[in-house]
Image 1 (spheres, rainbow, N blue to C red):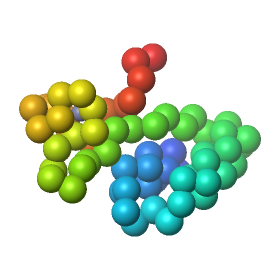
Image 2 (image 1 turned 60 degrees about the horizontal axis):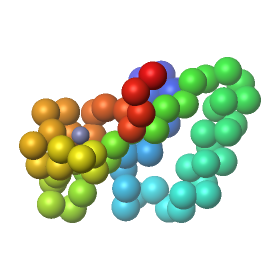
Image 3 (image 1 turned 180 degrees about the vertical axis):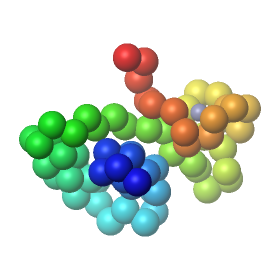
Image 4 (image 1 turned 135 degrees about the horizontal axis):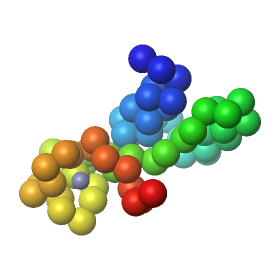
Length: 68
Ligand SMILES: [Zn+2]
């Protein structure tokens, strides 16, 4: 797993990530060394995606939060 993929996965873990400030700090470190960081949607406790499509999302937790 590439480092940027690892970070993206980390961002989607929700409960397992300790604090948002830690995520931001890690994202900044990766960015400083030239690794692209992109926030992804996550999974809610009910299994639906955090995007506006919710339970109807075809790629739950597997797509970026923003269009690039
Ligand atoms: Zn989604």
